[in-house]
Length: 249
Image (tube, rainbow, N blue to C red; front, side):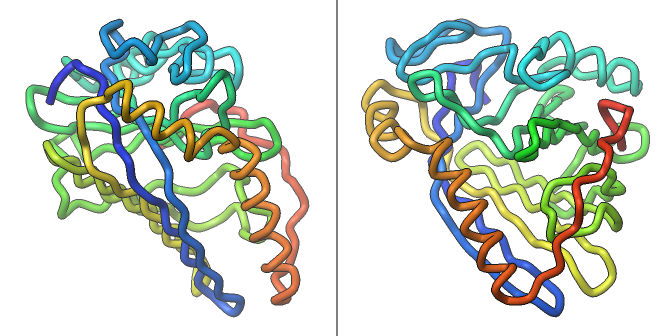
C-alpha cells in the first residue's frame, strides 16, 4: 500500500433480517489515507477546507472534537497492539459537508492487518468505536470473522443487543468490509465494497458531483428507510443512554 491518498469508489448494501425484511443499496466515495502524510492532489486537503478534505476533529474520540491519529494510536497501544502503520478509511468532507455512519482505522504490522477500529456515528450526534482484533493481534485474513458485542444504539428499529461479526478483505486493488449484526433471528447484514485507485483531482470533481448533497442525502435515506420499516410494521425502540466507554471490543 502507498501513503498517497487513495480513492475508494464503491457502494454499500444493507439487508435486514427478521420478521420485517428490507434492503437497500447506494453508492459512496471514500478515501484511504495515511493520516501522517500531507501529500495529495490539489483539490484534497488535511485539516483545512477544500473540495475534498479529512479533518482530525471528525475522527478519534468525542464526535466533533476528535484527536485523529493520536487517539487511534492511544487506543491500540492501550490494548497491546504493536502497529507500525495506521490508515484511515472514511468518507471525506465535500466543501465542508460530512456525515459518516462508519469509518475504519486500519492498523498494520508490516503488510498484515492486525486490528481495525470501527468508528460508528448515529443520527443522535453520538459515537462509539469497536476495536476488532484476533487474540494476540494475530494477522486478520479475509477468512476471519471478528465478533464484538453491540452496545451502541444506531437504528431505533434494532435492539441494543446481540453481536457484530466483522470481515475485512483489504487487497491492493480493492476493499471489502462486511458487518453482520445478529440478534437471534433478527439483524442486519451490511457491506462496504469498492476499488482502490490513486486519488486525483479529476476523481475528486467527479465525486463532488455525486456527493455534493451527500449529508442531506444520507439523512434523507435514513429517514426514508425508517418510514418504510414503520409501514411494514417494525417496532420502534426509544433512544437509550449511550455507553460510558468510548471504545469496546
